[in-house]
Image 1 (cartoon, each protein chain N blue to C red):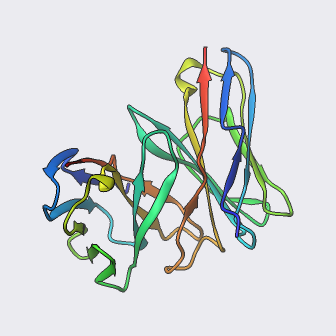
Image 2: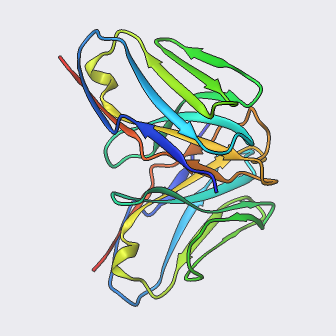
Amino acid sequence: KQEVTQIPAALSVPEGENLVLNCSFTDSAIYNLQWFRQDPGKGLTSLLLIQSSQREQTSGRLNASLDKSSGRSTLYIAASQPGDSATYLCAVNLNTGGFKTIFGAGTRLFVKA
Amino acid sequence: KAGVTQTPRYLIKTRGQQVTLSCSPISGHRSVSWYQQTPGQGLQFLFEYFSETQRNKGNFPGRFSGRQFSNSRSEMNVSTLELGDSALYLCASSLVGGATNEKLFFGSGTQLSVL
């Protein structure tokens, strides 16, 4: 059974700091891994998607890496800003002949001005 | 291009009633999946539909059901509501729901409160 774990559960940092969010998964048979952002009471916004054959993806101040063999992914946020405050969710899509998506519990990030 | 649209945005029901939630995917997307989000359990996969067929199902009781129409719009139904069904229900769409480079796009969700 695929399990996804995110560490830390919560994080508070001063503005401008670089930070790393961690995601681990138990079964390496994944289609891809996607990082999302969720603001309170809202839906999810896709940040980055890493295909199972890729090692990393970058978008602006965000960089996500994937190590399938060890079942780990990291999301690196450079020069954090107060607007980055949100919950960050990691999700793996399983190879089941269609999407079956398993989410981690998320990391709640607060960036202080 | 319009995003994923979920209706209604908020819903209040009482125990024992049933409820139907609607999801319109992004134009051209044929895979629709549903999720339940609660503070205690986080985001949990309910089911996924493609071409009017359920392809994958999560670990939820039979009270939770869904369907997909020929235009890819999907509905989710919960019968005999329980207090524990109070949650944010999210719908996501993707092109075909099986390619490694496919992203999931989420709607804003339906907040269901069961009293």
